[in-house]
Image 1: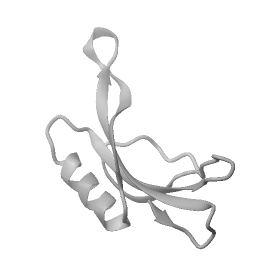
Image 2 (image 1 turned 135 degrees about the horizontal axis):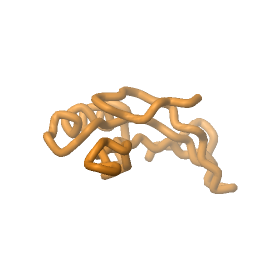
Image 3 (image 1 turned 180 degrees about the vertical axis):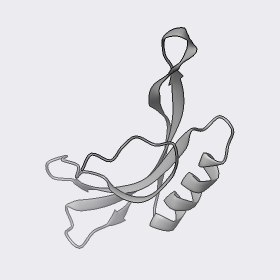
Image 4 (image 1 turned 90 degrees about the horizontal axis):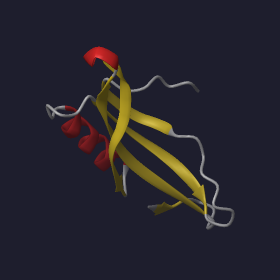
Length: 92
């Protein structure tokens, strides 16, 4: 976490990995979140996402940031830094 210009806001840099789930009759059903790692910088999150996406068990990985308002507990929508492999669609 790092302090944003406003003392009540904190920026979180996250690497999130995905694994494929199996559907009926062994077909691909979709993706589910596997692991999350939090870092203090964009570069660290992006580097980890890239490394994780190269693992055989990993379908894909995202590096993103969110801003948390410490006063209210609200968290912003994710801002993607990098996306590797098979990841969910970005609906924003």
